[in-house]
Length: 296
View 1 (cartoon, rainbow, N blue to C red):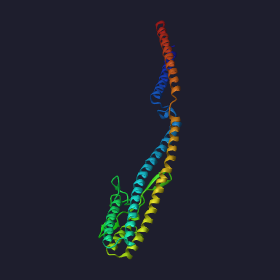
View 2: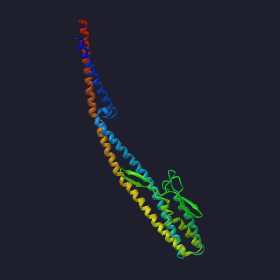
View 3: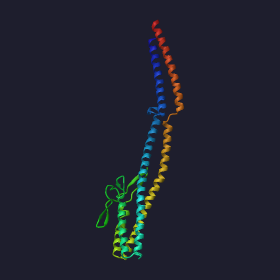
View 4: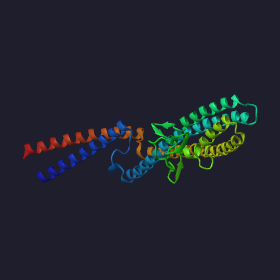
């Protein structure tokens, strides 16, 4: 009889512990709103959650990369637009001087304005973002242009700055001062400087030649601007797809991880009832065992 009582007592304690464990899990579900709070709750589901979270992490990184690319491209585009406007001003004022509507002192005044416009172009070449030069390639701490004797040389490198915006897609987000301001095939700054000198010397033939070079530089700047605009379009195209993928994965995550609150409340009530019933049964067993001890 003692062996049977011991077995009954262990079985009863095991049942009480089981019910209490279920109660604890249901309390956790209600408190956290999560069906899975530990891998043991659903090993297969936990493995799927891990994969989904890893992919969500990658998508989150791509979204941050998109924002970084968007900001850099927007700043670069703005500078290129301002450079284009300055070049347009150069062509207008120099064109009037070359065609004869300005002469003598008038050409000197135009040359002075060209000098000021060169300074404005050099200032734009030195544009920084977060303290880093955007037109120096990877040499972000280096001033892109160096001046010597009125001539400017490029100090950065030709490295493309690439940002990954999708798993298999990298986007170039930079242009260099060498492409915009000192392109060897059409050196904008040198040509404007030479144009100013030619106007001061009333050297119209040289001035016209420099204006032709400036026009070629303007075309090159326009092509760089188109590339940057295409990059902005790529960012705008990629973002909705990433957002939709992230939303779909978040929904999958919720279906696997989130608790059915109505079901959790119902189970909690059932388990509380079961615990009370088990405790009551245990009390009766204990009374019976005590009675047997007295009669023994």
